[in-house]
Length: 366
View 1 (cartoon, rainbow, N blue to C red):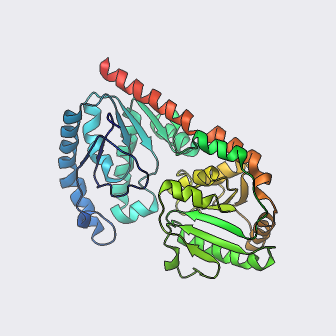
View 2: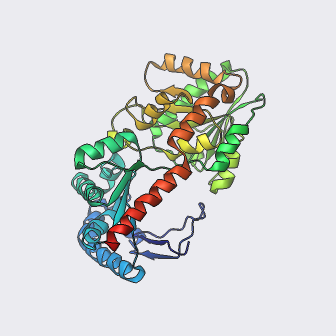
View 3: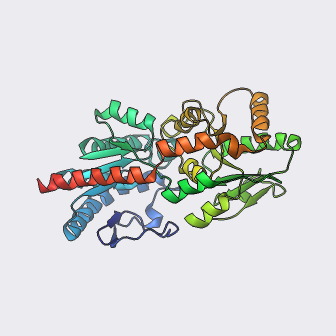
């Protein structure tokens, strides 16, 4: 991509998605100085007061070097402070994407409550002062509009390409000799995942065929509840092999917290694995609090089983009934297609993003 340049504050060792850029500049945060577990307060203070001014100058130098027509900002983590300090005063039109709020519990634990709130305020500054903007879920769009007075031009997430829709249109499911449930990515909600594993184990003996829980890149064998008798870890796969492996499964699993103790993540962020499961043609087992963005999506489009509230016995019965469906693909295919085409059409989203970036470029020309 000869006209695409990347600036970040961390190196990009992960090449699984195969994206290429013309050049990449890094305002490097040394690994030992990134707040993870130890000395988080001191490290965060250093990043906020010493690293940020230097990184802002580094970003300005990068802009001078590349002379971009437009800038696309992903307002996340420690990239936020230098971007908020430098970008609005450059006169370059920019598009801001917000995917996660920096005052979710994981960030408060790393950076401290006050600092997380400052990161949120700076992200909102980038959002409100942007030429164009987007967010990752409808609840987040509404929340940001209430907080900043600015509305998003679109909701931007991963999407399905034309070949994915062609696969879904022609997919036929053979009678299953076993039920394979796919989970991809990091396990975020540890306690809820352990609860689901126990729930699933309780209904396995009553199902007509064996159940296998398939993990892709989750490091599940490290968990105390992992049972190699009916669970399998496949490791981290590149995008295309992952999609092909998931197509061999029967269901996809997308969990968020059943409680509401982390609302800034639970209610507004949207897990990409939901979209990956749709692309693989998998009916979904969605789990979470009724107010979470993903459960709202699963209730709007009946793409599978949705576990959101109720007593464990009732939820076990609901899970058992859903997993007992002989041909879940045929049952849920119409709603999966409707959801994918209405919410996750990659071509449409890409075109709208291009329109936003052209609007940003026109601002600089003016």
